Image: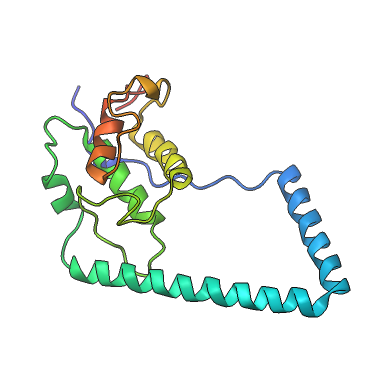
Length: 178
């Protein structure tokens, strides 16, 4: 049986809608904030304005950084990324899942071409919690099992995009996978 090409991989999975307990909690927090705003309108309004301005300034700065990074890598694509990995040894579904999920997680107007040498925290600014969520999506798309990740020789040693590809490649395939 010939293995199916990675271009036939299912698209990025959509997040399920929030269930009623989460919606209820969000509504209660919103009501509490409205109550505090009613009692202390100037303090809350001023704090919200200052915090909103700070968030907007930092978001703009990050967007410019990603735009400069994308511009410096103009013309690069998943093809160059895949060529820098031994795809005769590494599952191409893992390569595509890591590339597409990481690229989709970067909040940028234009896609940022990735390189295997990109540092996940320093270059892509991904924290451990974001990365944990992304790895679940990557593994699902690449049909990899995430049970017993502590047995993986790369467990706790993943710092770059290339090491992330290797980590997922070492994980066992799901039964009935590609």
